[in-house]
Length: 503
Ligand SMILES: NC(=O)c1ccc[n+]([C@@H]2O[C@H](COP(=O)([O-])OP(=O)(O)OC[C@H]3O[C@@H](n4cnc5c(N)ncnc54)[C@H](OP(=O)(O)O)[C@@H]3O)[C@@H](O)[C@H]2O)c1
Image 1 (cartoon, rainbow, N blue to C red):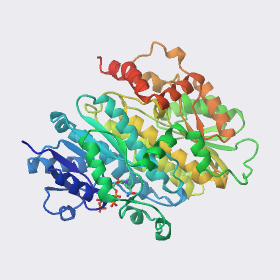
Image 2: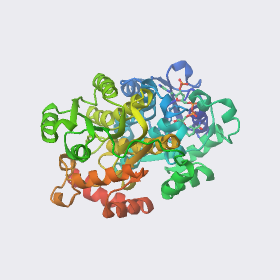
Image 3: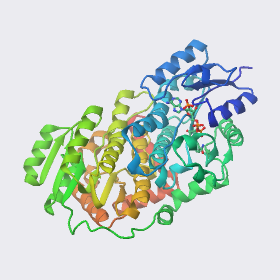
Image 4: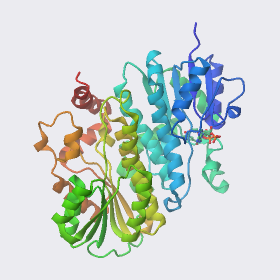
């Protein structure tokens, strides 16, 4: 009988190495991956690629072909953390965690799907319980794991019956990751960590049985509470503002990304009406000029394509010059819909860059560069998909889940200093964005008007709320998604994915 083949990324140490041992013991052919061949456990077929590099997925496929091996299972295990306050994040740290923890897993899955389909195989993503609770000391890491979860959740629906998509959520495991992430020894010394070998054994069982699972009772309860008791957990883990610095009765300086159209323009209009000066960013210079002409001198828009690295760096510097801000709303977003396996990965990468990389990098620039006034209010446009899923837009959903969770952790980290972060989950909104990506626009008139949504956002920011799901119907649907995710996923599969694919 043919021995099943598993490819495990990040097998130079920690959980990856322990997974290699656990699968080998069960008689699998294990292909180890590390940055260098020498770092793969000896005796295993080995593959080398640095997952920070854009060509890593292609390099891995070529090396697999060279070995003459077709994997039945891909385990996306490689990952790294970062410990410390969000103000200590740098652009390089953001990029490294985004590339290794999220993008490399997306790109490698895309590259290996034809092989995995051939084998009716599985892809398993090693996530973390940090993806489901606010993580003030690990805001970026937790966001990357939430993004990975969002990708897996929606890809699972798309690939049902072809490839099993699994997520595994360990709690703390004794590996070098904590020290490498910068956790001081005096802090981690007090932690109760599970042994890597036993976690790897449990993971191997779950992967062999093709089951997603948290590993252990603690992680299972934490995951459940983080999702089902969201408000309570936020309150418990977030210290209240001790002394709110006075940001003035009305915001004076407001930053809105994607300000020339749709929700962003409605937000700009709302704040200009209060007498604030609004600085916007938008990719379309013509549309920006029209918005400026319509709203007058209260709105100034800088033109930049947020998917381009150089443009993002440049515009971040210009935005810092135009600040500091009382309100920052990271609204710009794009999508790419349709079956992930057949999609153009370059288009998915633009979604990743505009929706996740750009707001994280801009947040880091503002935090490090003193771009925020004391008591600033931050808003992050996620999506209702965080609660109900979005089959047919797995990468979009990943970005929106990652962004929402970043906001959740950021709020927990910053609230004691007076700065707050609101995560915003709009449902269908009457904008060009929704019309462009929806497979069915017959009921466009029933979508929420952008001005109504902007009014909800302005009010929630004013009240320093943590989470906004605007509109009763959206809130009801989100609750359904929280308590009966299988149901909302089936509904959305029928109304979105099946219509997109014409089935
Ligand atoms: N330890 C925990 O408490 C814990 C809890 C929950 C989830 N997890 C997750 O479990 C997974 C494994 O973590 P671990 O604890 O075993 O950490 P680890 O001991 O630090 O191992 C991480 C692995 O990822 C690899 N990696 C990092 N950057 C890479 C890059 N640019 N290219 C290729 N490989 C790279 C590392 O290779 P190098 O040695 O070359 O850097 C190493 O093999 C991660 O996804 C982590 O987020 C861990």
